[in-house]
Structures are given as C-alpha cells and as structure tokens.
Amino acid sequence: MLVTVADAGFAVLFNPLQVVATDMWTREPVVLEAGELWPAVQASMAVPGLFPPVRLGERYLVWMGA
Image (cartoon, rainbow, N blue to C red; front, side):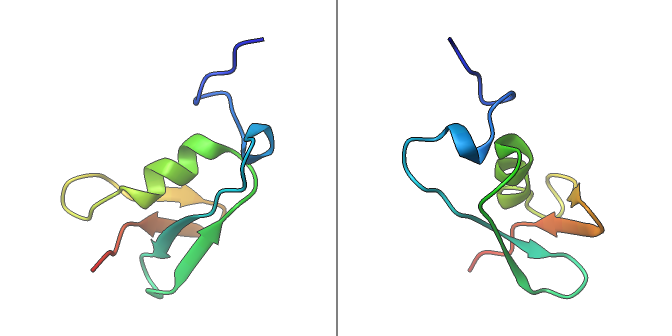
C-alpha cells in the first residue's frame, strides 16, 4: 500500500522522528512526535512573513530558527 505524506502520520514512519516548531505567542519550542505528519512539517517551516502560522490545537506554530 502506498502512503503519501499528506495521508501519513508519525506512526507509519520506520524511524522515530521529532519535528520542532515554536509557539508564536509564547515563543516556547514545541516538539511534535505524534499525530499527522504534514501539519508538523508545515509548522516547522512556517517562516514568519513568508508562510502563515499553522494552527495545531490551541497553538499557532511557526519556525523560529537561529
């Protein structure tokens, strides 16, 4: 069975993966390691000013890398 990234979750991955994003309001790092994979990837690359924040639950997540 072929699984695309859009359909996949962390559970289908062969190796453990943690994706890091930042809560836009508190600036706290958020480690995503369960649930849907694509929103986590989108949040980790949502550069403020270029891409909109990603809402996961009650949080708005963005990339706040160094």
